[in-house]
Image 1 (tube, rainbow, N blue to C red):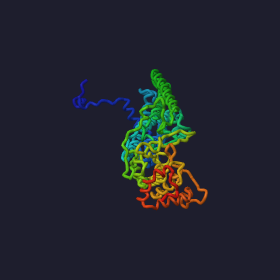
Image 2 (image 1 turned 90 degrees about the horizontal axis):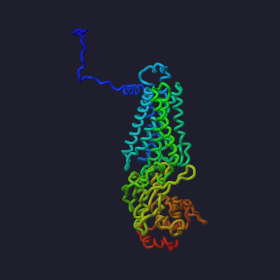
Image 3 (image 1 turned 120 degrees about the vertical axis):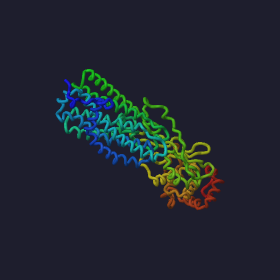
Length: 527
């Protein structure tokens, strides 16, 4: 039959031929458009902005500190939304009573469910990447040294498919309208409270993706600055998350009857078993992790010996009488350190035995009983010839971060007396004359009275941390001398020595410092 001339079909030109997209891509596009996660994504990002982003930017611009805190906060901010949205999508077919109808379509049930879970995971990963990019970009604008740490970021991204798999599985197993809110609440409490079970550095619960460092220490600025970042714990967490994701997805989408052909169910069983083995192995590895001397979790089976070698860097130094040199990552701290120690260093610069430099050093970490971690200077305070004073900044000791003013005050009252003590007296057994001269120098450098005893009485312990020690005289206390920490005769001699002109003090010290350190000068002989 020949069609009439007016109704003859028009053949498309060869250049206008359109190739159909693969069916899987079309299905994925439909799932991305009709997914519940885009509706919850603004809420998750808003939670991140309020709870994590603002606090992260308030921290020091150090890559390790911000990356660790971002990992912990971002996982918790997104876990509830991802698990809830996935549970809602997993129960969709049962809630809408279309399960029997969909059994008649050409695509197997496994393909439909896998596309729904993958779409939820893609939206969650996209939101996480956006938040990570915001933190890393803001950090790159202020960080003075180092580069992005990608292991914490990868753990955050890998946790999204895992939470989506758990929520999706719950929605398939219990298809109810109440499943999604229950899963949302359960995800928050499970993730948030998992860290409460961590005791010490050897704990299986460190496998939780919110744990980015030794939980006892937290986000410590002294970590991953002098030594490389150890990815041991991150590798174990990635093994756990990947295994958990594969096991849950394979179990809930490929094992039930009607999911697909028999070969698919066998492959799903093998994948679920392999995923469980990988997750169990990762948990066992996390339990063998220990706090290493550099403040990170070292897992023997995953540890690389290259991580034990110190990083090479060129320190940044001040222009004080004795240079103060810091790790370049701490360049923002240099003005405060120079302001705090400059007056003290001017008093002792050029004296026999005085340090030629004050250098920031690495800390050493030791796990104590329970959750106690001690942080101290690694090695002696004074080292080398000519002598170099090795310094720990207060922020390296963990705890709350200090502002510039607080850091200046802490260094002036802590490191200042310790530096003077290393030049003038001979430690805990310092004589009265040594204490008086040290106190006089500190008073001349405008160190607060309450800090005098730290350097003039106790000296420095072997590990390099100043030890405060309260000493009271048996008779009348020294007025204003650190609330009675220095005896009255010693304090009076210190005031006399401080009142001398700077040139006279220096000339006397140049002539008599050796005899003073040897204990051959009595208190009455001080000028």
